[in-house]
Amino acid sequence: MYGQVECYGHAASAFTERLLPPGTHVRYRVGIDPEDRYGRTLAYLYLKDGRMFNLLLVQRGYATPLTIPPNVDYADEFVKAARTARERGVGLWRAC
Image (tube, rainbow, N blue to C red; front, side):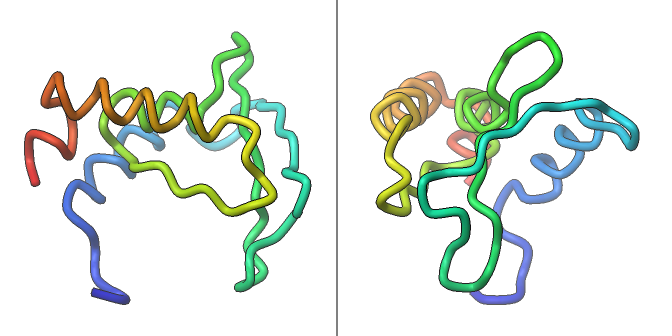
């Protein structure tokens, strides 16, 4: 459903806004291939305390993994986190 809000999209946005309010300092690392075919930057985002934001989204059920080769550094970790979130029924796994 292109152009429409996906299930649990509003909750994921609210989580992101709580964790990353304007002015929040983060680190990031761009993937091997820095952009997808639409020109969007492919990056791993790290919070000040060292946690990877991408992984937090998956662990809490706010996102599903999308691996875009050759950016596969954390693919297995993201898939494992999604499986655990699904098994626990958290986030979108409960609501959708």
